[in-house]
Image (cartoon, rainbow, N blue to C red):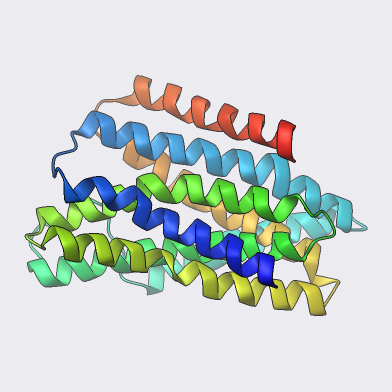
Length: 244
């Protein structure tokens, strides 16, 4: 449990670490923003397909366990998205009042962080001691550019840089809670472990395809975003090879 708390806390605090540059500047053009989003998407796809799903296959007695888990993760995120206020970072809700808009963005990011914390917790519950730290690292790498984007958006809504930094940091802390929940469920109810790993993979893949990739391709930067996605995926692949 101690290693889980440390890993999940470090992964969640990476959101705040990524937001640190907002204390010094406030402009991030569309090209750089799309690169960050696509890079994060590549990391998440690699974590889901190279680690979570293979690990779920190892712990399950049937491929259908993994199929069901992935589908449950996808459906759960779809339901959450429909019932939690959610907007894209810049393209929608332009007529909403500033305070309301800021709250919608915060809700969206917290929603994104739920499956990431779950993935960390379930991974620490597995017998593979390297899996938990590796997934925590992958989530942390994904959280850093996300934290910068959140803080930048909030600053653009006339929120002070200090407050934007603190809010961005706080959005990552939900991962600690969901990590503990995922760990307790998977470690105490053993048959849930492969379902939990597959569920986390499905939820992460939903976020990538539904949110990160469309957002990174929304401003005419498809080519550079594609390379950033591949670079993110390969970066995670290298980490899996040496530390997985």
